[in-house]
Amino acid sequence: MIIEYGQHTLYIEKQIRKPSFGMNYEHTHNYCEIYYLKSGSCTYTANSKKYHLTPGDLFIVRSGDPHSSSYNGVTPSERIVIACNPDLLPADLFEMHPDIKNTLYSTGKVVLSPSLKKNIESIFEKMLSESNKPDDYSSDFMMVYTINILLLLQRGGVFVHEHAGNDIEVSPVIEQAINYIALNYQNPVTLDEISEILNLCPSYFSKKFKTETGSTFKEYLNYIRLKQATQMLLTTDDSITKIALNCGFNSSNYFKDSFKKKQGMSPRDFRNTLSNPAVKTR
Image (cartoon, rainbow, N blue to C red; front, side, top):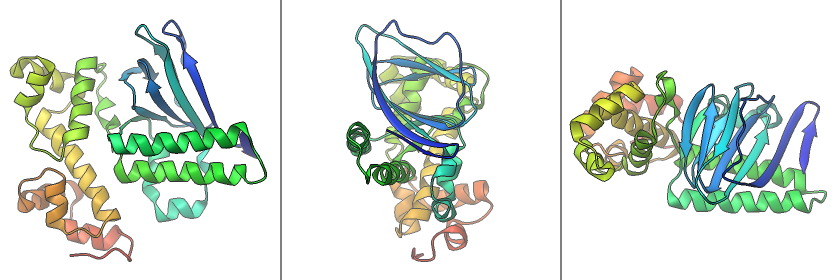
């Protein structure tokens, strides 16, 4: 089922790709694409940079950005794609949640927790059902489900695409490290811990991580923690101390200093200035 209002489009499709399938060229769309790899292995290329996707990875491509995909391994891959023109979504959604618009106008990977994967896959199945057997209400359900997915991504997804600013291609092993950080930033993650998991020498891993991402391991971990803390300040009424601890900072004072250095204001001032007035501050 394709929803069209003028030049605005919204649809979902599911396809099985054989390991031999691959596009030898990058193409563009006049809508953004939400790509989800449910099973198999995929190399996704966007803006001439390669990303290595594993089951449960989600990738967003903004309108107009060139992209392609190829599939690896020995078993078929299942992928789900939502095509959505942001202008089709309600304007007040972006007014209430400008971060959603930023997401749809950015290209990169989103790492999902196991519970978030389960929730989003459930919504995909509902959308596919509406698409396969449409009725008078299906277009509205498709819109609502798309908004639901976007809200869930903002609430719990970890956007890791900023590391792609480096011109050097990120290798599968560093992608694995980035995924691990995204799923474990709440814990006392260390360079030695990830090096052991990846079976790499810590000094070699540290240098490789810096070369490929443009950030040191500590800088990137801190970036992810601050990014998630910023989201929690806007979407929860948790105390600043609780947010700091939930995002992996072992000291609320260190969190406040790091946050102010990045945002130019304290977490409290940031929340008071930018959050929904209904959200309490503490």
